[in-house]
Image (cartoon, rainbow, N blue to C red; front, top):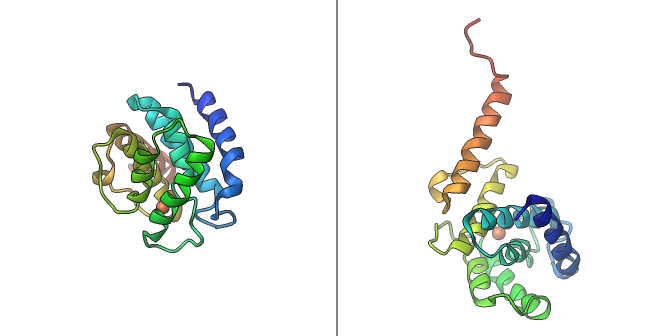
Length: 168
Ligand SMILES: [Fe+2]
Ligand SMILES: [Fe+2]
């Protein structure tokens, strides 16, 4: 699926779901974080052949019940509970069990063989850079996410070094 189609899908999902998310207004985990993870989750799903709509909706819901920016995985459980309610109401055709299981475990610091869960977990981890944390390639579940992380790191190195070879 083209990037523009995924962006359009994320916009529609945001209109539908954002009013029910408790994380609105948070500095690090607010709606803009949900939006970025949703886009990336959808793009990873498209790249690995998973259901893009499920990945986009799951990406948007993964932190939906957060009430603060603190660490801790209670929010993952809470978000899976709220996500199940919202899936039943707005997206009853999607696999709520698979999506909610992925959301409930997204903060456990593991990798997964489940291709759909991998899209969310990798998208969220690729977002860690925004809070100044380095991305651990061993904690990414898909090769496409590892390639993306390496490419971003290489671009940053060029920016920091200005493309200078250090010889003069
Ligand atoms: Fe989270
Ligand atoms: Fe997150």
